[in-house]
Image 1 (cartoon, helix red, strand yellow):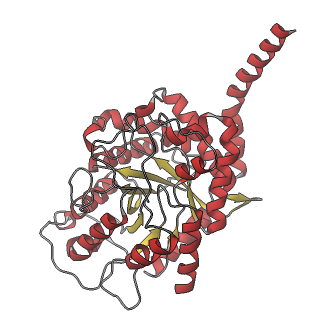
Image 2 (cartoon, one colour; image 1 turned 180 degrees about the vertical axis):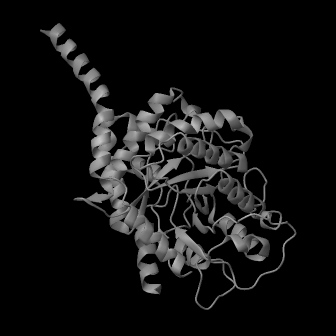
Image 3 (spheres, one colour; image 1 turned 135 degrees about the horizontal axis):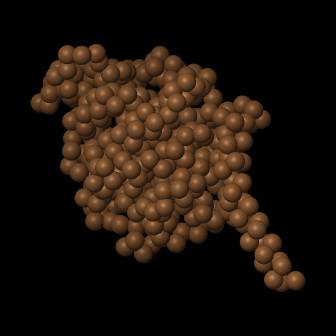
Length: 397
């Protein structure tokens, strides 16, 4: 009896692995991305610098608060690999939607070769599960109630520009999560990029994916790219944001990838304030923005738009979603970290709004402000923060 039972379990496990891709296709068809909802939000935030798209907060830290094990090896990917945590993950997504998030992010960030997921097909399968769970959370009946952003994280280590893959290897690695997320997401989000080439790898991988598809009924999802910053407001690589933004915009345009926004995340909010100040003072970046400041000074860098005589790429939105972590050491790695990074005590919901988010937004009486259109939070920013931001944003409109 025991032997027969083991055989039955093995059969069911094998059957489950074979049937799962088929079930994902069924779910994708029944709860597919809503083009109308995406267009509605894009039209709205284009229409005025006072309009915002409210993102979610840090999914990983919220998972751990709700009982998901943090083994310091595969981090939040535990909630995908271990099926018993799938319901908790869905609840986390829903908690952000209930708090006011208009977009949630798939829990696919940690499914990378850097932590041991080296089988491309396995990566594709696992990120597909993350997309499936997020899409389910964002769907009420047959209606999408929130956008789903497909997270594409660093393939080796967060915060480490010195450890990124060689360009061609990175492009090949990003191919698998891009394919796995495609049926479930509205927008791809390359996040916590620490150097411009890491973002360019995503652009090239996405371009290759689109070129390989039958263009008949195929929909190209747009792309958001978010960079993590040093305390001085520069990328972790030392690159200036005002140099990287036009470089990225024109590369995406040449590769026929629709880049719709550049954001800053997983860093101190003070660093984001410095980056936005640099953008505000650099007029050569303003031609690329939907909502630039009305008055600014000339910066020293030369805009790529001045070097290009052909048609120009579309404008982009700016966004920000800081974390609540204490400063992360420049040589940090997940493998070497014995415990979770400590949280700051001075970024409660009202403080995050008052000291940072409210100052990043375009105030009606401050025409020199840079227009931030996408707002949210990263590690340690929970549903209570998002709820507070939602209340304030609605009140200020």
